Image 1 (spheres, rainbow, N blue to C red):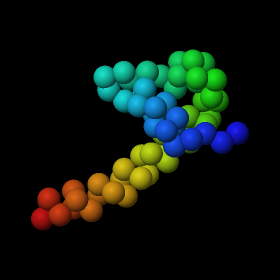
Image 2: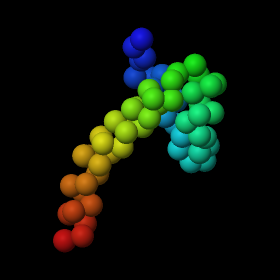
Image 3: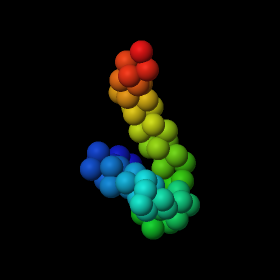
Length: 61
């Protein structure tokens, strides 16, 4: 099953502060497997690192 970018974003926001909800809890609520949520979270982290890392390197110089 494919999920829209908007749905993924909404679900991922539940993992972030101030919500800080567990993947297990979100999976049960949303009907999405825990494995899928871990994949979404890891993909979001990879994008964040790719986008933010160059700026952090510039700041430290």
